[in-house]
Image (tube, rainbow over all chains, first blue to last red; front, side):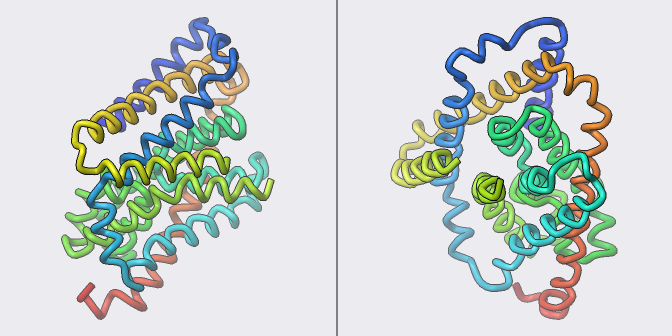
Length: 201
Length: 93
């Protein structure tokens, strides 16, 4: 949770500095932020590759556990696809790409603002933060009315870390493994799914 | 975009190869944290400079929440169905 607050703080300080006239025009020179994104992806990759939890969790793979991240992907994208008939302001592909952050707001907002526009990047940031906050607050109710998988589905990529404690508490410890597995798989897939969606542009 | 994915794969591969080198992994983790902070600060900075975003902030916030709620509802409903079919009566996971 503290990590999330720090991240939002950096973004907000940037916005305030920007509003108060500190220019970002120095960024336009050779666009260093693209290289920064490449560096970030490399570092994120190292984090995944060196995480023994990732490899342990992948060994436990079976049909029942594998179906959970698939539910999250299919459910999220179909929900948003239906919504796209009503929300005309943002293109369908952009909406799907924003939803494909699955709560991983830092990475998805950076990728989308690089590939598309800043407005969409900010939308991705807010949308995916909302997903995390919603899961943290709603988990007790979700378990009560929609079963023990519901908070894992709602948490998306965050179910491996930030929302794991609350999920383990209300769904039970036996669901913690599924929660971590689903979160790990979704975290790895976020950049791939966003790239796949934008390949239809 | 394919470039980003290849770079990430190289990262995963190097991470796996050097997973025993604790100091290297800690350094990479810390750098990843700081890259995220800096990139989000820079995103914030250009957002602050971008009148279009600032003037539409309420609208952007509204759209974000709608996208989240539709995506989350879709996944919760689907998880409810799958839970009923595969999980509920068979607690051995």
